[in-house]
Length: 408
Image 1 (tube, rainbow, N blue to C red):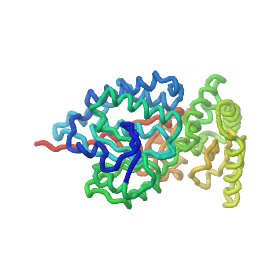
Image 2 (image 1 turned 120 degrees about the vertical axis):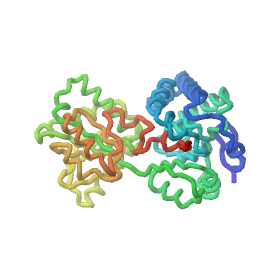
Image 3 (image 1 turned 90 degrees about the vertical axis):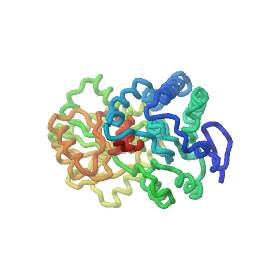
Image 4 (image 1 turned 180 degrees about the horizontal axis):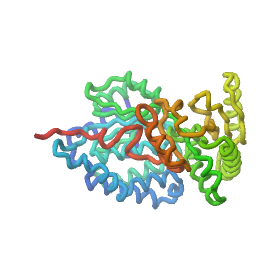
């Protein structure tokens, strides 16, 4: 059994020779160690100084997230873990990350939170992650590890084809598995042997929505309309709606006539704005959308289609609750409702992020009320749906990835 070892750079090695396993019991760093924070701060600076990738929005967002000031803020927010009179926190051990292919920077966030808790990490990345910017990230990660050799046994990025023997070998030696990639990946890894004490943190398939107050939207100036369009683009088009927190559906909230005006104005604005920015194969997207619309018609779902190949609104009947993935590429299910409480029928366990714009105080409070129980793990302003935070899918990842040693 051999794997491609990406950090530190190498061609391929037997899986049993992964450096982290050779020193599995030697944990010389502690949670929120200054050496770890300094490492990520240097990594951030190396990213921002690289002209090949420092203009890519999602890469820049990652670099800013890794800055010392932001890490210090997160440490302060989790100070309760550090000062408890009942326990001290320590690393859990080896953490095996099964990284997603749809959001190609997620493996860095996943790894960073775990390393900040002083765990040793194996990250399996998809063979589909071969974009030039990701190769550059690997190079910069290696460069930074050369500056901080004590971190080399804490970060190992590997690549191998689907192989249950390799996954089983690593799983049995891992204290935690962080499984991204959706329901199928989770189901697959649940069938793979792991230690009886291995903890699984899973991120299944999710779906997200945007809520817009029509009265607020209709009152926007031209400048603010363009700002709205840019924020919408950031949330929905950065990963072609493939991110679990990218909106698939839009709920327009307000009086019926106000909602009609809002939908028409928004669709016109987005179509023109996105046409200038969206770099994609329009012919393929058009075919994808046509097939999706035909499939929906065959199901006898009632809807009206408005828009073009850049922003396609499928106007749904709000009396028939349907919260599901579209085909992506700028296709949105759109519902007209009078108040946020009508979202209750759509709050299913799969609903992850509700981004919002221009809601009344009562509608915003209602969204928070609807988050009780399963469904709605994040409520965030438009333009920030894809921003990673250590509070994700209902987990505090710093808490989940640290061990509490009871001391009396």
